[in-house]
Length: 384
Image (cartoon, rainbow, N blue to C red):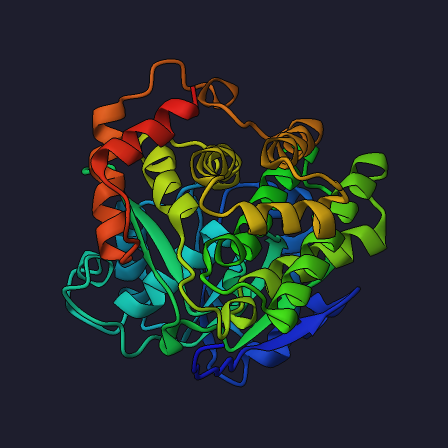
């Protein structure tokens, strides 16, 4: 294992009925909150009413800001920053999935600075402070509820950039009630499953280590639990335990623990995916199931031992064929309803030049070495 420093300050409040505690926690950080959410889903499933009731009980003044997209965009985040500054809010309360949480973080950082927030994403400026952030998670996938990362798309340039491990962006408190996820469609849940698995497995596949007993066990255990929970949710969408394990697995998948001490881990599937969802506005998890399968096919010879271990310990596939393991993963994705090809995501004629140019920039920025433009093009062509 390599050296590491780990600090995660987020308080998690997990379980049935915990939304009644939102107001009390918010009141510890101020009396005026910017409530950030998507469109109508939290009103349709009752989450909005529960959160508002709790805020009212604690006499919290609420400024509402809705309309966050599935892939949050820069211009909308800037509108939220302007609103936060206008009303001089004390904190930002995000209610929704990872997209809402990520945009809320951008607003929280931008609300107390005069810089263009895009400078944060292009590494021209560092995020050193932000308004307090509290989250109510309704779509578990990205782990944003317990990490210091955020991702946003500049819709003018079709660039989707992000950052991670920023202490100022860790939520103060995050509320996780599995019952809020009952209303999610199986498609939304499948995309979330792909997202969680990629978060867990990229370091697992890309590491230079031959064995990592603690980290391997952690990653394999959570991945198996998430996959099993996904299948149980398909059978019964209101299976509380399945939803609970799935939700907690999402948080543990990207809160930093899984990547600790792993030598040489990198995020090639993410670097390939960000341009896809930025250009074609598909769900991030849908893009990740496509890029993960393609990346594994392209790199199978270099990482054969890790693929075979994945097959044995997670998929239950006893074989010496990397192709059979990858086929089994692809079959799982197909079974749960997330795509493994461009066409499955509605992308009939991908712009390879644009995809390669954007991904090349991310590979360089994220220090993912050993890939040429020809490699990137070859991987995108596998996705056809």
